[in-house]
Amino acid sequence: MPQASFVAGDWGTSNLRLFLCDAGGEVLERRAGPGAATSREQFPRVFDSLVSDWMSSHGPLPAILCGMVGSNFGWVEARYVRCPARPEQIASAAVCVNGRSVHIAPGLTCRNRFGAPDMLRGEETQILGLLEKMPALRQGIHLLCLPGTHTKWIVLENGGVREFVTAATGEIFALLRSHSVLVPTESSTEALDRTAFEKGLAQVDRFPRAQWLHRAFESRSRRLAGELADDAAAAFQSGLLIGIDVSGALQLFEGIADAEPVQLVGDPRLSALYSTALASHGRESLRHDGEAASLAGLIHLHRLLSRDEARHAV
Image (cartoon, rainbow, N blue to C red; front, side, top):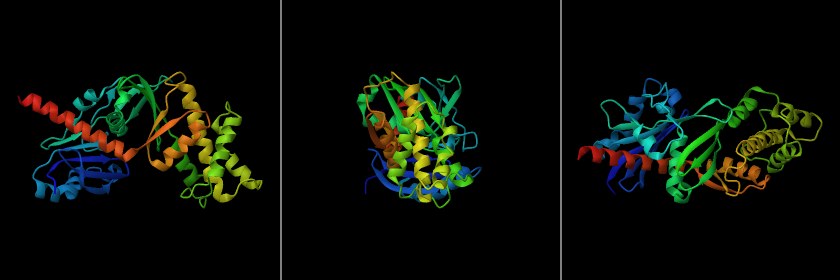
């Protein structure tokens, strides 16, 4: 078995994913654990319980972590780096946990196009991973979309994050499913009704200037009128939300890499829905697995940190 070299971890709100890696970045073992929300004030204990046997077998190993573990309720706070931000700036702003060889990546912040403060945390490693996987993105201007609970639309310029904006698309959808009559609880998204989803997208395209608040009730009214089955309501509402998210973002970033594909980084299933929505506007997209991008970004951060430490040791 190859010799382990470091531990990489994505410690989000709901889940922790740990990877034992060799010097080349190959994953030797994987572990899962509780998210940051349930690990408050217990981060050292949770981390040690998951990696203690790795440390026993391979000796003390450095670790690089990202996500909500660096938030104001995390293990230690890793403050946001202001955009425009380059990979080297992100690495240099990583915070070391006192008395440990554990670094935590910072998030990013900017003033978005509405003049409001905007933040991301954890997604910075996905961006870095994508840059490692696609070196061509280090030149010129490109538009990225990271679909999720809080979807991020990101402008890359010459390998750095210039600006971004957040759309709370996934969170709104989850709230509707849990606390609204607009999407019945029996309406499943596990096997998404593509026809209903695309019908929602088409409704957005038919009335491109309409606001979502004037459209949201359709997932109920169409059911009451017999035009939409109960188990298709979630897919229809998803089509409305994602359609408005995509059309709004394309308007907001009009003129930004219009001739280039939008780079989609995230859960494959969700990215496929965004790809369909982008195609309805005649926009091509390329899809990248979010977990793979996050891991590649963590590996790149580890190498940048190791390089800095070696330089300072000389």
